[in-house]
Length: 212
Image (tube, rainbow, N blue to C red; front, side):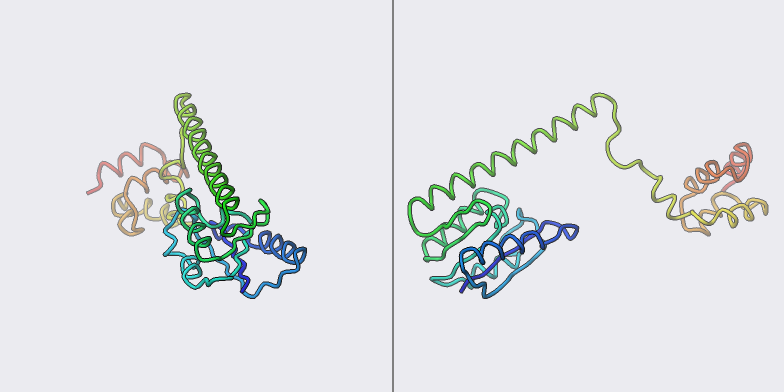
């Protein structure tokens, strides 16, 4: 049986490119794909927690697995090598489209698989290190990293409630009480009032001071 495996890391990615590449490869080599397996999962997770783990257990002697590239199998050297070792021991072939590997139970396949896995592991390590260095440099330069705190949640909770807040303020309702009615913290209410200029800063302070 010939099985094609396609994996993306997030639901924002598409499997169509991988499917197209595998279909073109199969057509060129006159192969008929008997089964497709697609999933969204990080390659760094445990193989048994993925659909791919179930597929591995069902592979039989003489089966052929086609992937767009070896990194679709896993994200670390040991995971990839363990899988390829099992395949080679059980006469299961692994074809990769981009690298054009046809890995079977022979010494050349083992050398190629090891070299690729090692190169991929080194590349990921270097990318990770460069990312950490870039973030450290930005932090040293005073760049604030990450999403600004408070602004998004405040906007989601109080946007569109300006009229209600203004009415409550005119009724001399305290900031704390407004927060309780709107189910947000009183500081969120106070900050939002200032930002929207619903009343003067002096009034906000007076209302906050009289809050219980």
